[in-house]
Every structure is written in structure tokens, then in C-alpha cells.
Image 1 (cartoon, helix red, strand yellow):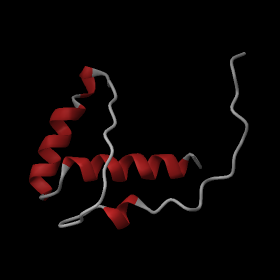
Image 2 (image 1 turned 45 degrees about the vertical axis):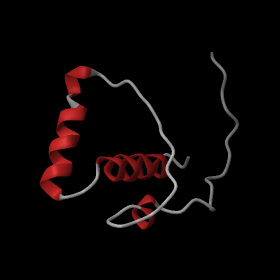
Image 3 (image 1 turned 30 degrees about the vertical axis):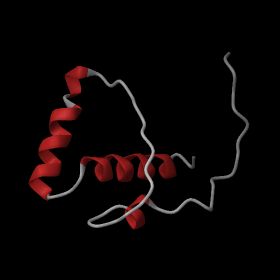
Length: 74
């Protein structure tokens, strides 16, 4: 069995991405990088979604990751 991280309570001082992202929001951003399976065509799908909905790719990724991490209580 591998290393198991001790259970920490979910952070309470992190704002929701939906409150930070959106038009004309001037916020400090940090870059993240991840390799994902090419077969999912995430980059293409994400670009098309952002163009169709008039949103920024960065905001879509931030909201999606934030929601997923909160659902995982991380």
C-alpha cells in the first residue's frame, strides 16, 4: 500500500472560482500545467466551448477544477 495523506478538513479560506472569474475581473493568476489523454480532445472542446459562450478558457478551467476539488473536499 502506498503513502496515504492524513485527512485534513476542507479549507474554508479559499474563495469560490465563480466569484473570481468573469468579465473584466483583474485578479492575480498562476499557471498550471497538466497532460491529459489526447483521445478526450479536451483542448479542442474547451476552446470551442469558450468561443461559443463568450468566456475565457482560463475561467472555465478554474471553475471546473475548483468545483471538482470542493466535491472531493480538498
